[in-house]
Image (cartoon, rainbow, N blue to C red; front, side, top):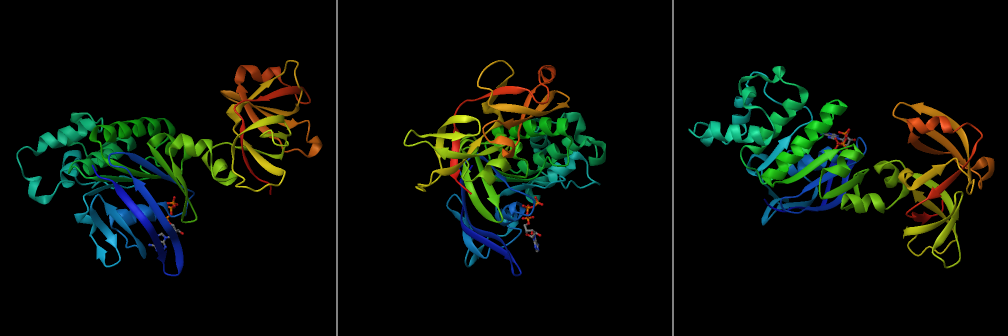
Length: 358
Ligand SMILES: Nc1ncnc2c1ncn2[C@@H]1O[C@H](COP(=O)(O)OP(=O)(O)OP(=O)(O)O)[C@@H](O)[C@H]1O
């Protein structure tokens, strides 16, 4: 296991810039998820690390080894990096065992103890040994992805790269496969980069999350820290449901007034901008709604049944008719307690993140 570092990496295809000055360090043996919208440059970043593409500028190093830099380019097959593609890319005419063997260097493929390594990585990837003789079309999508991971892990790579490996799986299978993959990576203690457009997947994958937007790495850090204190309201909304309210700073108290009343500020991202007008970010989980007596600071505009929960659309009273609606979930059994036009009380817990006004 080795630390992977990118410094000032840029890449254009023809005249179209795709990555701008990306720097990122993935500590040895840890997992990082790179998350961004479609077309933001995530796969290109992975392909540069793998050695499938050449960077225009910057360097990529693995421990003390420079993989790519001006005047230096280590080809993909010499990088000691395993790659798992979106669809697994298994060979359809080879069995599971043969596919996994294919991941091993040619010299060692004929060795006696090989089936032991195949069995070992199958077990690591939570694959029943009985599947060894099956062909890819005889496996579920989740099993295919785990075989692809087993193949990538077989030669004991320093780094494993995962390019949206769960995106083709349906929800239940995705969750299960993701956990199996995380467990396998945890046991192999391998430096890993996952690319995904799914924020929940990114936030739950590992030690670090890196958010990429239009080819720029806009924020990286511990998932909880990035979610708690996003650099912008756009990144906040990309990472999960966000409520952004106009806010006014109250003197030097550190609190703000917004349509839901006075709220404490958890992080101030105005960077010295002294204007009183600002925007406050809250997460729905911070809001508690109650139909009982209280401040009556919002009115129910609509109640929508959503299966396991009911969605309330609340209009803050303080903003008058122009205040933006706030969608809020309550458990399904509480839905009938709310009707359109009802006055309710919304309590904000935990404070918000403050950004400059529009
Ligand atoms: N080989 C290529 N030649 C030309 N343009 C390319 C090439 N590969 C990628 N691009 C362009 O670079 C941009 C980023 O592509 P990339 O696949 O890295 O994005 P992504 O974030 O992985 O998107 P997605 O989630 O949709 O896979 C896109 O506009 C894409 O069309």
